[in-house]
Image (tube, rainbow, N blue to C red; front, side, top):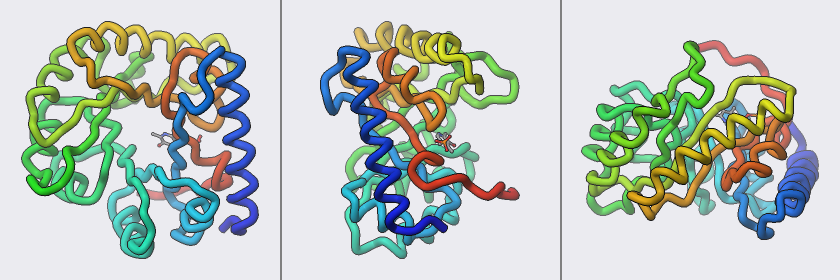
Length: 234
Ligand SMILES: *Cc1c(COP(=O)(O)O)cnc(C)c1O
């Protein structure tokens, strides 16, 4: 577990990295949001980040996430589901989260819509795109995005916000930028028909500068905020 002080100082560094990347790209200050990815980390670490002003948290594992939400129920947090979605988990996901980043097929979108309570705000969703066409990765193909966006836009309990991708892992900055640029092109082409789109969810601890340079509006940062994760068995 990180100490409270570590989380706070790491958050300061990550905010500075984002601010520097915004300036380098000629983008407005504050145009990139930080989603703090707290998977495998204890509620105390989230509380420390919350004390330091962070409100948006990303979680990948449902059971663990719900447990932490309960522990932190007296704090106002915005919860983002960024893990793989099995169709038998759409009900608890729709019940507990404010955002879902990894909608990649009609069935998941329809089920999330059906399970979102009428009294709740519509669920914010991003379409996950397999931007580098990796066989091992989830995500809609670039060609599937338009039809899926149209379907989601017609579902009243969902609000289509944008696109999300987990690009191929590489240290090559030019290659990292290509992935975000490709995602941004799809985003721009969808935006004509879907003016509500405002979110490009891409960029992690190792590639946030490249992602911001090419138009990311939300970076999902785990390690650089909360420290390295122990490997998790599932
Ligand atoms: C774990 C995870 C992250 C954060 O990755 P770091 O390299 O630790 O910053 C971002 N997005 C998704 C989808 C993740 O699963």
